[in-house]
Length: 69
Image (cartoon, rainbow, N blue to C red; front, side):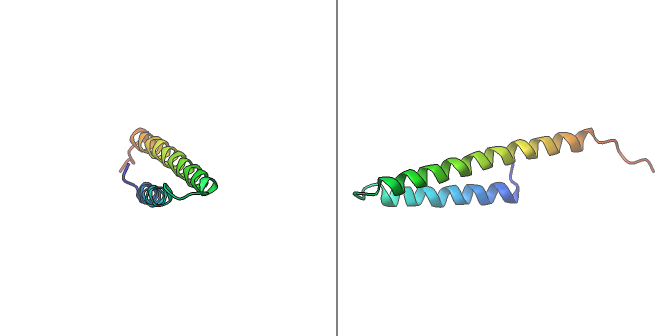
């Protein structure tokens, strides 16, 4: 939706993806790889929640009655 929160979440996911690439070929790093995947999924879920919340806010704003002058 372009909100600051969405942009921060997208940036965070990008950093985690870069870390995942960086550790992809490391031996004995399965636990770390798993943690990075979990963090990425959490960020993705937060992003989805923010998108849905922003959509709901937009609908509420559209449905609000205009102020009478």
